[in-house]
Image (tube, rainbow, N blue to C red):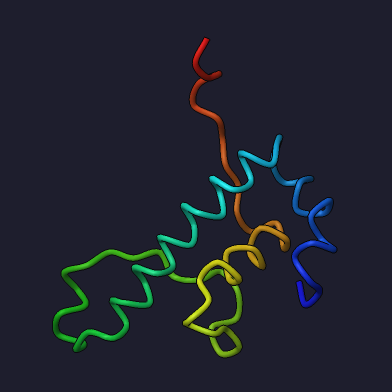
Length: 90
């Protein structure tokens, strides 16, 4: 996804049922990636104590300062799936 986010919003929405769901998916995935980035900065002996979900896109080309961009790329590539656990508050 090398285009601007706003140009690809419609394409991203095909992976979620609403803009709200898309924002939640991106936010949760970005947090997971941020944890992975932090764990990579630890000494190798300390890494085994942590579980962090690594990026599903090419790790050589990612910018570790932009976990939201990485999450958007993963969603645009169809590598992230979600399921709704409940219908919502009524």
